[in-house]
Image 1 (cartoon, helix red, strand yellow):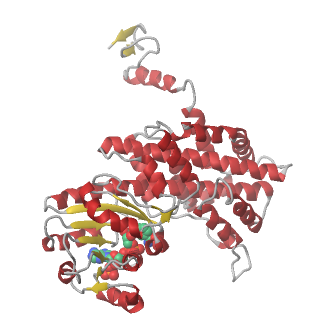
Image 2 (cartoon, rainbow, N blue to C red):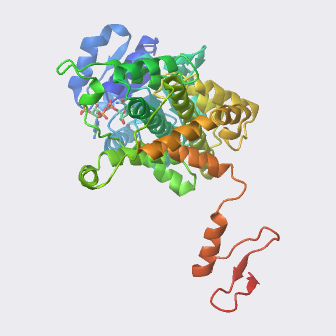
Length: 478
Ligand code: NAP
């Protein structure tokens, strides 16, 4: 039976095609299928010599070309496309076969699909894949959920095709049902925050120093040799150095300033609201993309609203650059800390038992947020797997507090000079809020008791209390 395929991929657009090639290049026999057969044929024509491919035109032949238990990766347009393929597959499969959805599914859909397939004694693995088309081909970061049993059969293959850092695969079992797609969603949310913070740092350097795009590219290149070293900083330097061939202007200046999104940032924020986890960095980044696309509102505001009150006079250029760097690093720590908080809260809520240190480890390579910094996060969770707040880990607490004055100078300077820094500012506000001895939330609770008899707890004794605000203002214990 050695001629049967070890893994199958259905959906051979950019991502599926590259993932199939990655499996084949790693020595696996790969069954191929796509709704439109021409895509399958073009893959064979262009790359058929890269390994052993078993192409099929029909889903029935595709399923029959796989060894059992079958491992079938679905890499189609997320949503209705995934459901259509699953419905087509179910009658063709046999107990213990494994169906893997590697698309960008929303995790509640993954939970639903896992239940649907379990009724047929089939395993369903919701698998996050990060790294875009380049990662899919050369080694992505892979976040598979589903049953632990399915990982026994699938894990070694996934680990082999994933990115590796220091010989360690960027793939690990995440947890049951929707855990893999959930973690991928938060990864994307963190990516939004990281990109927004980098964009704000760029804007501060441009507006504060009047530096050119090319000069700022050099600054980012320099930053990429230190604590901030990451894929996103690296590509930022490249983008800023790029010149538009048609106009000779910096490339960044010929792009409309409207950032789009496919929706994973929005899902992350919606879930954080449900769980009650303050992920202000990701939320600001998501809202700022929406702000950038609010065209009529921006036009109305530009015409009416006054802006700068003073010219930003920066006396020491190098000191300012260093301040921005430190503020960026501190804000980034906050955004990651919040993302890991969300993973912890979801893990508890949905019973996933996710190892946060392992998440940082598998994000070190292959994915968009890959960074030197993630080693530090893994180390923090190795020191204390139950760490309540990443920001309060000894290393990060020290790193952030040593940059605190710089962070405050930058946020204050930006506010005084009218440079919008939603993510820098909200991250600092979060830092000051989460470390506060006492918050004005006490007043809010008192207001709630006043108008809605929502009760309150006292600092000096146990119990639930209410004050008779409209009567004699006496206090009763509930
Ligand atoms: P895509 O443009 O999202 O989807 C195109 C593929 O889906 C084609 O193979 C198409 O088949 C198939 N398809 C669509 N509707 C279908 C249906 N009802 N039944 C059967 N097949 C259907 O492809 P992609 O960019 O390669 O992405 C694939 C998945 O990976 C998506 O879920 C995406 O969100 C996720 N993802 C993408 C990236 C990225 O960088 N692009 C990164 C990570 C994850 P036909 O050829 O017949 O039209």
